[in-house]
Image (cartoon, rainbow over all chains, first blue to last red; front, side):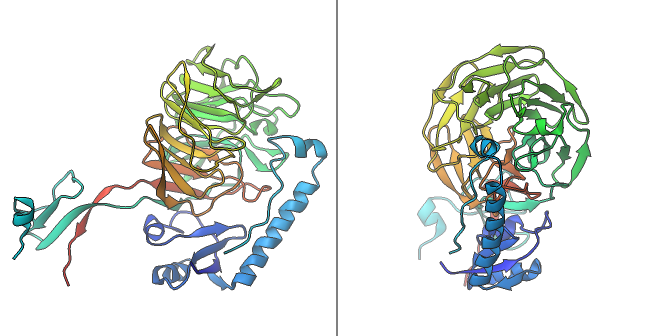
Length: 99
Length: 329
């Protein structure tokens, strides 16, 4: 399936309604980035409704990459003892590749 | 000409108002609105709800999607713990008194069970040790209760009130534990042992019909508890390693998040894929409410990616039979 991307701040109630998510799949990514199906009127209307700013796939990937890199840097800076703690350290954030 | 009566052996009823309750597949003619109608199964879905006052992950929650309480957790990983408590009425969040534990870091990896007005907060991460702290929330404030026999962080919890709750699995000072302890409002007693005790289990249901799932690697393990014994059940279809959200009980439940956007539905015997998916799949720990029916759910905060807690909240509505108007063209 082909996708399109936009950036929009999730303000909470009403940002995505049950009606929206019943009509099409909305997938969120770090950086207030949202992935929606391409060539879908309902999805396009939703982007308009939430005042989303369209991003190309390359721009969207750059947004995600920057946030993951920041999270990885924060994790790398943790003391070794905390990295090894199964709860505190969690796992080092991994890259996200957009479809 | 083929007729409805010819196929089904009876005619479509003509009624002045839509019937209630609806039976899936039911067809009727509404002679007030001049429309043929059908009772059809709708689709399950998630929707965004009011954001938390501040981002949180790896905390606890109890109640239902319209009467929940969220507490503990971490604002950021690893060291900024929180003892903040917020109540949700289905529309908005209200700040309540902080948990009694101090320092605030002790709110990390706490587990909760019960209702919005009778919740138990249990255990937690004490930095160099594991906490046995037990606290009760009655709707506005917290009071200390009898401490757990052994300090435990993470693991799972279930129960419908602060006087009928269980805590299971997790990490104590000796390592991974499979033990279960039950609280009756006054004292703790030992319960059955799980066959495994991963760190990041989640639980749902009453203490006598609880379901636990997810946890660590591979994150597919499922067990049911009848009040005294754990029984291994069919695995989750895919890994939900880090504190998945759960609702329901051992015979009908929903599992969501924990590294998977798509929900899984439990019918007491096996899992199936739900049509609904979370919009924002927090891939690290998130909170879950333990007292929901399986047709609803709430997903509060979480980490995605690891580092900072989310403020976002989503609520789930399961598939229900609704009225559809039949049109011809």
